[in-house]
Length: 279
Image (cartoon, rainbow, N blue to C red; front, side):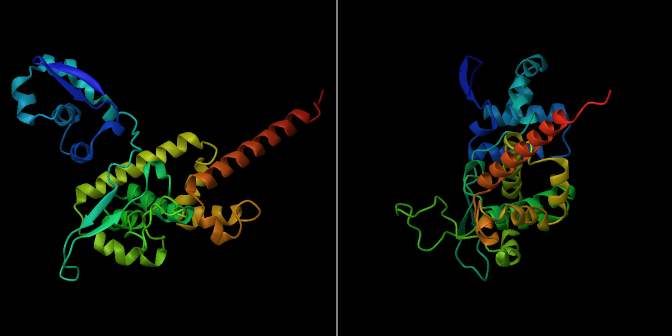
């Protein structure tokens, strides 16, 4: 956090994405996805959000010179997305005539800690499709419907066999029906979720660079079968059957893929060095 003194008053200002509060995340996302703002307007709006003051205060009380001096506070928002903290741990589906009471659904933990590989395969396919065409709302609804699910029954977080995931097990059969319910969520909440997903995915790309290569990315973007193909390749002695592999934690599968890719590259490099030179 930054300790900023403005008008003689100390203000604690978030210095990273993960230091935002859930409320501030929603406000930041609202500004980021407002295509009517140019960069300077965006920074002024973000200053109001991060300083937690009305926009009119920034516009009317701060001089242009003062704004230029403090606009660096917004740099982290407009730089690389590093949001991995789970600031939207759950969503509440609004009442409908079919569902007279609000319903709570729960999302994954920070950094995809409890995301299973089959779940990741579907979520990532919808994420890539949404990035390619953000005007198609169903891709965003499908992504949220994969990630957020009702609480498992029974839910016993103190039980010895509790695996750290309060959500019921992922079943692709339910995605379409739940996406129809997700459509009733506020769009801003869904944008916050996809922003978090993007941040976690970028973190995976940094940790497992040998996995997220252009070739694998291209194949994964074709359909859910892209990552499902990976699951078929990884099933065997390490993770067991295909079904068992799909239930493995995503980070465990990606770590094994990273190790295999690095070992394969080391063997190729060794083979190149052992090739006889031609005079």
